[in-house]
Length: 430
Image: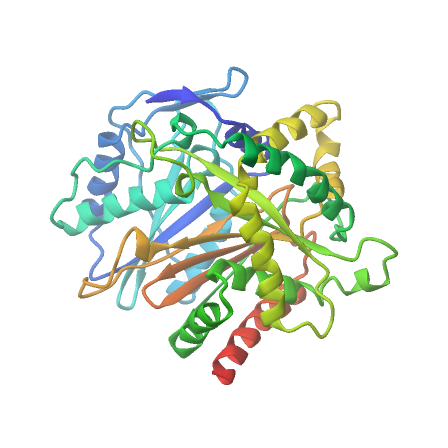
């Protein structure tokens, strides 16, 4: 398998020059851990899908998987403390560990940890090669092969590539998108900049937690009653939780708003393409709000929803390639050591959100022992915090990846607690 790198992939390769740009997905299996069988399932699926022997050529903008057998050894975690702490520490380590960029790159690093009632299998991957949906479907195939389930190994396509899709955006939508650019630029000029102690320090820290039971049910009911999406609700929660951390903006003469990014899976919003594709097909847009004191969560979620509906209607996320290309061009005029600080200065995001509902693509409702799933994503020079939501069954696993050069441990503990407190308040109000 070979092809051209898209602009999102080229940008990620550029960000990776500053700090590893990785992501990690973790599957929690019930039952016993059989290392040899899992190793065979992993390597068999990678070989069957032709995802071995990757060569990236950023200068030419191409990638090539040569295929064939390739070792991808599973690291078994060991250490003091509980299994959950071991897995969290390993995910954080993998987010900060670079992948070698020479020829014959293996863009996956698997690991496993024994737990009291099963085991966790994690797959760290070089984010420039794949998006969350591609990797989730890869892990589903590995899991089904390991468990010997019917249909394992069948030729099921990966998500299709929207760049080969027919049906262009249309003149009206293109005009709306172009008209929205000045307003988006104005929003960023009114956005308060996150204070950063060291712009070149792009290390990642990680916090993991879950929301389930009556609290989760209350959040779902609130979305239904308020006519907002689950993603809208968590965008509002994130803005509200970040607001106390950014309290200094209240005294700012002009920059008094907060901006957060929204990652969009492009495959969900475009017509079907001609063939299967394993890769990275993402877009993004920005939500901005002043988050005034006294504004209810319901009203904030409604304001956020108006922005996200407009972005979806006009497909503003499809403008991401043009914006990234412009940023890459402008950054080429500055030395590498200055680029992270310039990105943060002129694109002042406080965080970003990525949302995946596993129930829509890997339903666990009929499985006697459901498989759990969570994921974490690197921050980078564009966003100092990433909120990753993964809904499985009737709970949502949440990771908060953040840069300690921007957020202290105490600040992130407050963000997490405020998020949970607001969710509990929805339950109390039900």
